[in-house]
Length: 203
Length: 203
DNA sequence: AAATGATTTAACCAATTGGTCAAAGATAAG
DNA sequence: CTTATCTTTGACCAATTGGTTAAATCATTT
Image 1 (cartoon, chains in turn red, blue, cyan, brown):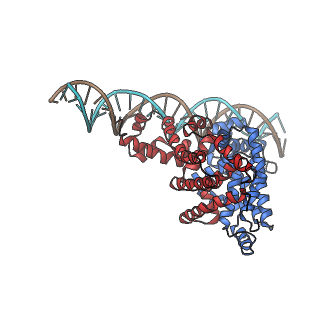
Image 2 (cartoon, rainbow over the protein chains, first blue to last red; image 1 turned 90 degrees about the vertical axis):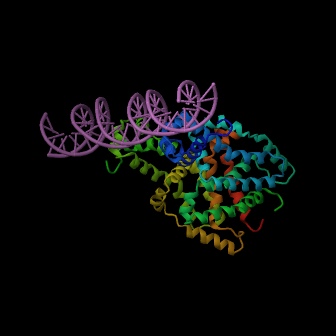
Image 3 (cartoon, chains in turn cyan, orange, yellow, purple; image 1 turned 180 degrees about the vertical axis):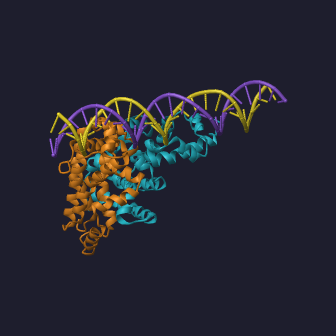
């Protein structure tokens, strides 16, 4: 049972991810996770000693889903405009497949920022690399003067926020689930266009 | 005590707003609200029958802070580009003064979308007005073809998301509290510039 | 100052919740 | 088959939590 993880354990992780990501740590109930996994509550504590331990496992995994791929693109050797397009499309893929994780991640980090410090290292962000690249492009006159922090903030905002605000957007505009997916698909083009048009020097 | 609301009641509302907005409904404890207000827990239930009732009062108020002013600008009779600048600066003002409400609002709405329906009416959004205005500007060739939903989503994303992701931004970039405020101030110019440059036809 | 009504408190209560435990089922090894 | 180890369960526990109650205090009116 060390090579192929026990089926029960996988079932628990899957169930816990569902419950945690859409109820949050405080709103999640161990009983509900047990029910979702189709097992006894005591068995949860057999595999994961406590709610905190189980949450930690899920959170690490979700953080990984949310950031690893995007950060690796951010740090790759690749032209800036291509990076922007790739990150945008990667984020839309990831968040379309995991609609709940954006709100979950930022809520949990806000409630307990220390968690970030411990887990973010494994994600392996090195902000200096992208900062240098943006600095170079500014110096070369390819893009207008802008701080890396602002550019990244713009990009992440445009990609992630619509998923966090999904019910609000749907409520205000009267979209249904399919409309929303369509709306997100359109953003695949709009986000890179908006970011790049705003920063490039030759309009 | 009907004209000037009881001092105790105000104290409770103030305390409840603090606790609810940074712990969320599920994480908030009636005892902690009582402590924060410097009163007995039973007194909470004397003024507000239940946790739900108290929450409802806070939520309505926070929703109002978050949306009313911005929506009134959105629906005002005003040139589009001016609207974009005004909304951006209003949002930065509001969220700088209430750093916790953005994360709070979207988290609570996600956990319980029905709440939006009941409360959003009082905020009084009429999406058609801005939709028409944007449609006109497109037809007049002042801005490129873009759906109102996308433009509003872009604007809200750029304004609101940085506050939701604040601890993440601070963690990744190594900003401290003052750096963050400075970072936000810079966005007063960057947000309208980004949005407007991307949509206007004469670059 | 006596009576009336509103405000505040300490003590309690029932339900929920995370967590434990001892016993029962499986599974594999000798 | 027997033993030993791992997995699963039902019953239970202590702590927490939202909520109640009856009595005490305070303020107002007469």
